[in-house]
Image 1 (cartoon, one colour):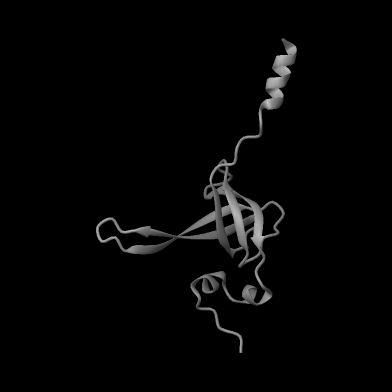
Image 2 (tube, rainbow, N blue to C red; image 1 turned 180 degrees about the vertical axis):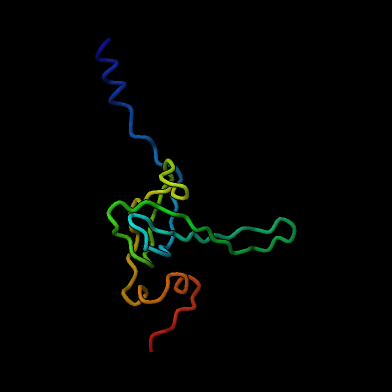
Length: 116
């Protein structure tokens, strides 16, 4: 009977990750905190037109490795502070050095100045 209890204990896997989200780092100014902008489209209920929307999420970055302009994957977790309810899973794509100089919001909206 003790073997079955041990087997069941070993079968228990880590808590599954909650919703995974991919977004762009808008700010890395806080210590171990990043602001991630998530863009999405939603359809207007009456007119059927697609509207562009965005959400800004605060995420926990334990090693302070994410930089402004990076594309990152974050996941929901327990509340870490008043506004921080997500944690950084991985950096999907590093931002090029030029994009770090202009704000991430300009890069996302396409208003960043072009190289000459």
